[in-house]
Amino acid sequence: GRMPALASLHHGITGEPTFLFGRAHRNSVDISPHGRFLVVGGYGNLAGGMDFWDRNKGKMIPRHVILPGIGGGSDVNNECYVTIKEAADLTVTSSSPVVGHEWSPDSRTYLVSTTSPRMNVENGIHLYRYDGAMVEESRLPWDNSKYLPDKLLSAEYVPAPFPNTENNSNNSGKSEFYYYPDRPQSPAPRRYNELKGEDANAALTKLRASHVGNGKGNSNKGIGGAGATPAASAYVPPAARKAGGGAYVPPGARRGAATGGTSLAERMRQEREGSSAAVSAKKVTKKVGPVGAASVVAATDASSINNPDGKSKNAIRREKQRLAKEKAEREAAEAERRKKDEEAARAQANMADPEKRAKKIKKSLKQIEEIKVKERNGEELNDDQRKKLAGEESLREELASLGL
Image (cartoon, rainbow, N blue to C red; front, side, top):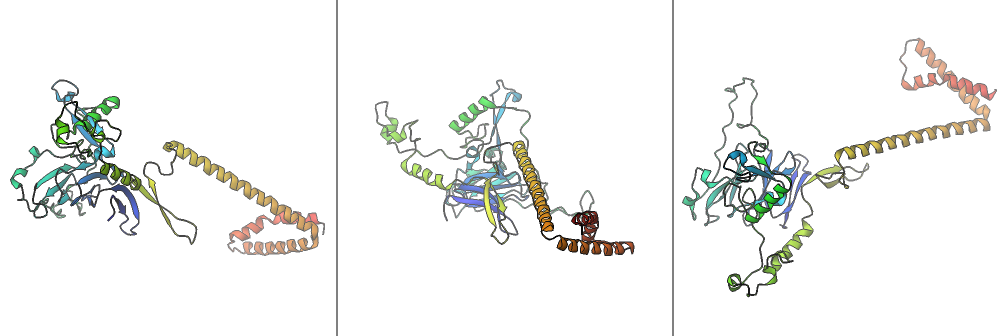
């Protein structure tokens, strides 16, 4: 299909879109067993890019990267961390082609694997936390080097056992569908100090430049995970790479060049994607038109729904209240004007033919007398009958004014 592809969530019954993730080189969406987290990934013949989302919040999951030694000294309390929130920094890319991918039963880790016979090189398994941070291989119970180059056939999680209602500890008799509880995102580490402001920007710049894995010695590329690969640069001949200051280097390969150090093909790809990647993290709302008209589905930015000027929520609420008040005042003024117009038209009609008006009033008074008889007999009156009784006095005054 068309690339970059548009990933979206749809209503399970109506099939209507509810959330748009934007355009990227992705071909898979994996939802965790509890439905809270999901991964939008590009696997198979794609580069293996992965975006980790919190479905409840409609945002990519922020990542806390620990920076040891920033605070000085060897005490762990002196270590700091920085929170990564930019989508470009949160995207992670697998270092090897991805064949298998799935969530753990507790929705806390995500497994990707390269297996044979689909890929007969670089066989192995990598594990990521729900926020996209890669788990260090030293902490894994297996050794990926044993599967090289083509000895891994499959990698899957052991399914969680279904809970036994009879042995339920709370004896409530209610069946629990999940063996593991549904847990939200973990809070930031309290034993470390968070960098903010200029310090945080400086730390993020350093991380982007060095492609540090998770700040704890991981050699993976990216920020806080197995991040995106560096941008491709123009080809530089080997002689030019090793030569001293007098060797010629093409402009596209020079550091800091206006072209950004990218090849012509890369720049063309960026221009092509720029025109088609305008949709990014958008919530879909359904707008219903007039009676008989077709329903219109509109995509609006999740951070600026009905807010093109970037106003705060309180300002938007006050603006809506003001508009509602003005609308109510206009409607009240319009109703008062119509009432006066009707009274003027009635008075003009009475002046033109008073006998006809007097005859109509007498007929209404006769109906009112019949309603009074029904009321004395204990019958229940409706709203129209009560309204006629309330207008008896005004009718008699109008009849007296006619002088007939």
